[in-house]
Length: 160
Image 1 (tube, helix red, strand yellow):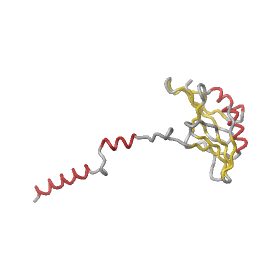
Image 2 (spheres, rainbow, N blue to C red):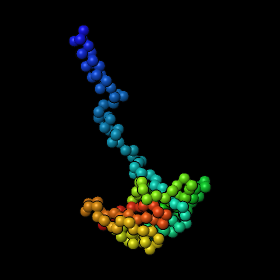
Image 3 (spheres, one colour):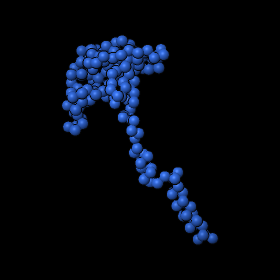
Image 4 (tube, helix red, strand yellow):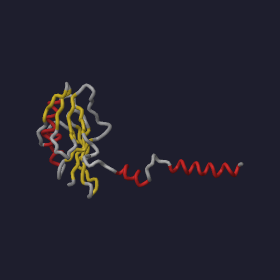
C-alpha cells in the first residue's frame, strides 16, 4: 500500500506543478514583459500638492521657464504644466485632500541638458536647494533636490 501511494503522490504533485491556467512558461514570460503599444510611460500623471496655487504657479513658471495653465475641475484648482503627447502629465493640485510633503515619493523633473539654470532659479523665487547638482554617474547624468514654496521635496535631473 505504501509503495502505491508514493507514485500517486508524485504524479499528483507533477500534475499540480504543470497546471498554470493553461499558459506555458513562454506565454507567461511574454505576458509579464508585454507593454501595450499605446503605453508610452509607466507613469501617466504626477500631482504635486499645493496650498497656494497662485504662488506655486508663479514659482514653477519662474523656475521651469514655462507657462502653466490654471484650471478649475469641479472645485479642485489645478496648475497644468505643459507636456507633449509622450510626456507624463504634471499638475499642481490645490484640494483639501492634498498636503505638501518632504517625505514619500520624490518626483524628478526633466531639466533638459543642464539642471543648473533651473536650480539657480529655485532660491531666487522662494524655494530652497537642499542637495546641489550632484553627479549620479557619467552615463546617468546629474540630480539635485529642492523644496518648493509649498515645502514639497522635488528632484531635478539632467544628462550634463
